[in-house]
Image (cartoon, rainbow, N blue to C red; front, side):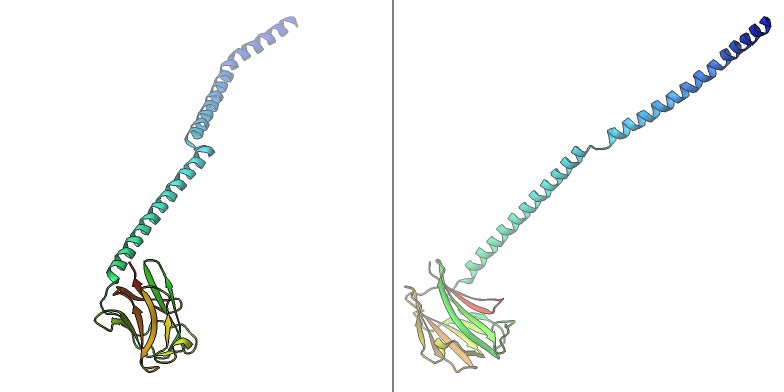
Length: 225
């Protein structure tokens, strides 16, 4: 019996010695696989940007876009200012000026107003259609000096009706309260055919005839400098 026990123990010891290399190899493979997975995870973490880096990148891109937009807006403003200066310089003159549109059939002159703008004096003629709507274009208008001394600037309208009570009749005159541009008067013309206003001045001054939309206005700017 004792010999059998010793033999069994010897067999088990031999079996253990044979299987030990296999277990060792298995552990080694598992270790290598784990190391490979850890290396892959580390590489992924290295290549992926952090949250802080993403936020910083977005903020930088946003600042670049804002700076580009501001630069474009400044450039557009400078170009617009240059165009306005060029237009104003070219527009003011002592020559006859015209708004070449069809006669203002059914158009009413509802108000004449004026204001001192510093470098120029502005007279505005407000228009509407007889049905109360806003005209799409101004009436045919022309501005010209009536006398060689250039002291009276005429403003001629074709095809309009005057409903401003201050200028219903020929000879109606209103003082403008300015030392250079002194008065405006309805000079001649029958309603709905041809209407002419005379703007009195104490010196020959250049002018600029134009119009504005929104509510239709014919605008006369008289240079004072």
